[in-house]
Length: 450
Image (tube, rainbow, N blue to C red; front, side):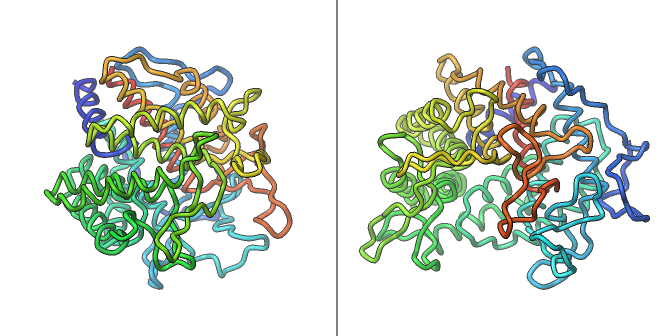
């Protein structure tokens, strides 16, 4: 039964989006100051073996290693993630910390060198959405496990409050709201996804340019991964709610963005594009980031499933093959470096960003699923497994159960340059933990589908 449900879930979500849990007491601050990040015995998860590669379970089975990792990370967020002082639009609402020190979680919200009370209320609502998504995925994979029900009850209304009438041109938000609304059978989240898509069209789509962009910026510009996701969101929402103008705008957005942002030499996407006064598109940032490539592949495969436009699937495959054949992929140690400058050819290899690995991995899942639906063999399975191993065994800090924003090329704690960060970056970030849980749990959905 679980296998059948998983197949249904996985197939339907390829059309919706890049596929992209015995009695906890909710997200709460410990009553006494915490000095070490150690799970309580009451909710101690299964220990995670760290020496062997992640096993490849038989089709239709869950991975014990990924299950254990997911439980450990959820426990860590449960115990240390909730910030009662978090603010949203100037009001104290509570929410997740942005980060906390790996071995001393009483040190929180380190946003610059020399922390102070000014950062106490700082809060990113996107990490609340990531956490809701991780909980929703865990519940779907483990329907009999109610360990995190009270955590869900706390974070769900907060996310609904934060993303009511969402109006920024970030298309992935639509898909997370829609996905979680469908997983949780929550019409409020689904309605918020509809509103987000409507705002993409009415506020951010410019028919004179033919794409979604941030016309309030100076100069007007767009982030490539966000805009292509907006295009795909408009296609999905337009078909879902019978808005043909949205579908047309979505296809135009994708096509115009690909024309402007796909480098013909590297076959990778630039990071940012400017909209000039003459309504033409010009590259602003020549970097090719794995996060941009992966998130765009997710959107393109979803757009292909919605429209059956072969070009979208072809470009998605071209991007993936080019990325792993490029200097971005660390041939010696595995994992993807931060960025490649496609103007100078310079590789920015001082660190590896967690989000770049996770989005590239999810992109691979969806691309290969689309190939299987066509009766074609999957591709780059070696890289897919290597990314799972890199995330689970090298990015994952198994002693204290979390993920950093970035690590060194050899997967050690990164130290930022003076004046450019917090110094020693041994702080778990809720963004990295949320994206890692999404990518690894989606590997389980992918395996259950076969």
